[in-house]
Length: 369
Image (cartoon, rainbow, N blue to C red; front, side):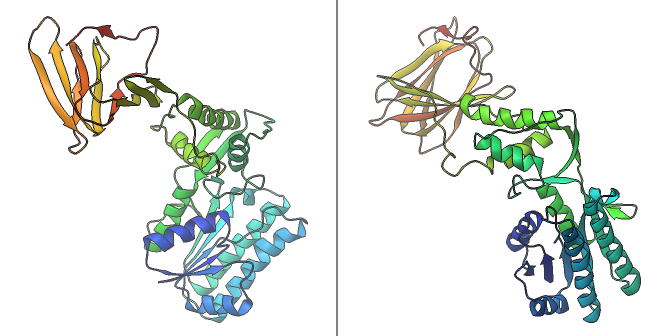
């Protein structure tokens, strides 16, 4: 299938083209501001499907709204009619088309051109009135408050929140791309005259700011946001895409002594924490038990032994572990336990605990195995 994409270098266009290139074997004709009229005619004649994503959002002069959002649409449709194209057209419009301002009027005019084209040719058309779209590759300080907040907060720049109570309607770029691809196979979502992307996230501006600021803090606190919340998960992915390229890394606090080291890696409020334990050759760590805290040990390098003894019992249980055979050892409650490095090199163990460490209630009691 030959697919024509106008606005291919724009936010939505770049994401759509990238996905199509890596998930399909379609030929993509990318139309940008550098595309010549001859190229546009050639692409239009060959196209089996048209994604019309080009548009003007922030012009220097208001007259450019009509030029970019209406005149170019008319030009594209004219070429398609001239070539007697049977390609369906998907157009990305905006909920701003409902408003009587220069931008909204230009988007509405473009919509009407597409509907008229449908009446004249019988070709299928899909017009999407999109709310605010957020995700990777959106330009900050342009037309997305999410992009601006993510960029500024990630780069230690100030942000301005005029009214925290403003209610935003947001759709995530991956959901937009998924829906646009569905139109290729007629699995699209229609709502009366216009098509729609699902889900739409309704969230207060103040909540968006709060979440993005928490993402920044989470790197210092080694915590992970609540990934069960769909919007938080998508916003977190978006925030990370705006990190400065020299700040992808961040330090961890290593607790080092003669036995090796113990370093907290990740902490979550509802899924516990993950740590990295390094033991020197011959070192035994542990010799304690827990009431409620439970753990999982995974030796990923070196070799050793994990020993258990149920309280008030003499029988010692032994599990030999090695980075050459990855297996998880559960640490049940009520068993004192230790781990010993039997090798000649450092032994590295990934340790998960079902709760974040609480110095006021460590639930850890010394008892030799």
